[in-house]
Length: 172
Length: 282
Image (cartoon, rainbow over all chains, first blue to last red):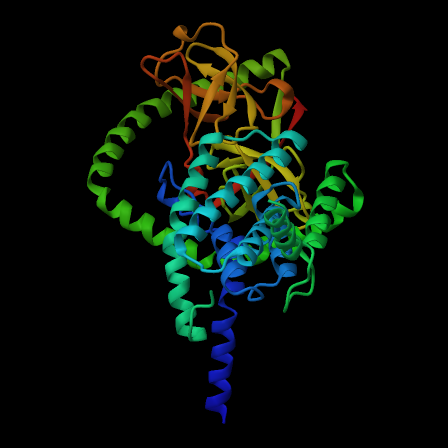
């Protein structure tokens, strides 16, 4: 009996992995800054939120995404609400793609993700730069967008594999 | 044409307005809430400040715990890296030690002479309250170069305190909560401090670049400054006392820019000193 109980706890943890990953990634971004790679950074929460909102809507609640955005702003030191807005816009874009897609494909998802992060980063730029007058290094933002876009394919495949392992099939 | 526009509207409406299965809130409601919070913050609404303070207290502590695995990885990476360079580093250190020893005796003499001269002319001197703090978070975002330390208003940390790594300036306190504070690093794009460049004795402003180095601004003639010149705080504006070492000049061949390589490595900060300099009369 206790063995079954332990297994069900383990299953719950596995099912809640996207949520745990989101919390961990906003509190401690996997930015590899200690490796001193001059032109390397990516936004893991963007990939995570887009993928799971697209493929398994409901696995991360919108309320939690909103809260994690607030925490991200506090940790990074940005005006509070910017990341929450960005994350929710990503959810909106992925929900839109899900609604219009009949036959999903990785390439379509990937390019739409590229479009999404361009729009979302533009919104962040408008809010941070025009309303709050914070200076921005454009090269860093462009590099961040580029690597986030490129790494989506890798993470998407990893998450597909994880879905197959935990939920039994990839939910398209 | 009309049908495709309708499809688009329906898809958008369904994505943003409809509350989805397993979701407690609709997207548009949360987007509006985030926008309202942003607007209120823009106009410094008190409630947003309280929300921010509460979130900070939770986030900074949680972030420190969540960062433990990454910090362990970071330490392991640094140790491995240092291990490979230990031989060359040893040779360099021996050479540096020899140089430093010869300078030390000279400095001791100058210091005692300086104190004697200051007391002769009844000049103002500085004394400082020093607080040792541990770096909790050193997450570098593309927007802000800052670190969080584990001392806040309960430890009598105040805005504008200088932050030192050993004897080297690394930044200043820009945000204080009850138990933590945020240090704006010298490398941040918004950081600007008055400096003296030695031995040319040129006063200037050191600005952050958002990268690992700073840049000297508002200087008339760059040619009088030599490569490897030392940069110290000038004490202008009474933010920091004068003479705190900051970094050294690196001239780019083919460019008029004067870069400053900081003495301290901001990615390796573990413990820092928070110092409030006050003037006292002799």
